[in-house]
Length: 324
Image 1 (spheres, rainbow, N blue to C red):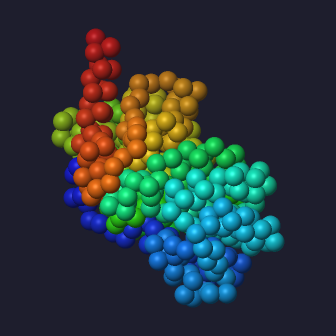
Image 2 (image 1 turned 120 degrees about the horizontal axis):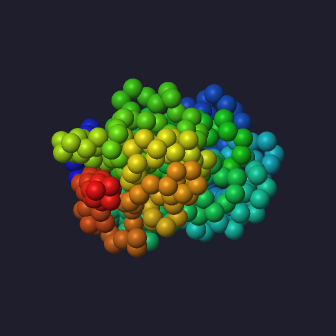
């Protein structure tokens, strides 16, 4: 979304794909239960609720209690998916997530919808800016941010098969299609190389994956070859893919719809520092945003293909000047 990313066909919203994936899993596995904080029409858990009312629990506007109940169901052997807006479930439920899920290692899957500023006119109080950072602060949590509907279905299925806590962030608006033929190669902790390149690597997740692909096309027109990695899993991070990118392209730009201090960029930076230091740049939020149309917000806060391309060009030029 934003920049030239809108040139890509729009598919279903990742929250829509999440809701449909849950219903599919519900038909296959009677052990799956779903909880929601009175937002099922928005989180799209309504599809599961319609088919399996005996396995669906609307706990009301009480995310902390929802997490505790999910932990109890998981402790009794259920695979519990608990959903609310990303900001609500991670901020209001953090204490319960810490003690009842992370510390206990219960098999709970938290899905935060309406992540990032692309929720647009829904308002600033409902924007999830810090949710990924909060999830990363909880040891043992797998943390995933899928790029489009197909990848979301793969991520939800992988979460159900994984034994242990998982956090998945999905978004409100329709997402540009990245995977036209499904996402069969999806593996937790393994980045997907969407485009090879030799001069710089663009690492992104969520809506920013489509923007990174569009940025790579812009860069190609200017003679710069950019690799694009879809880093859908923030933890466990694919450090091998990061190291390979650092060694082979010698420059990395990370793009995310989240505060840059605690999200994908910080995780990639730690891997780069440990394995093969190279120059880096970070595209993301540095402060809270205001309310507005999604595309306008993405432009105002520098989350477009143009912004990614600009940083990549500057990074490559700085490196060349250093060599000279």
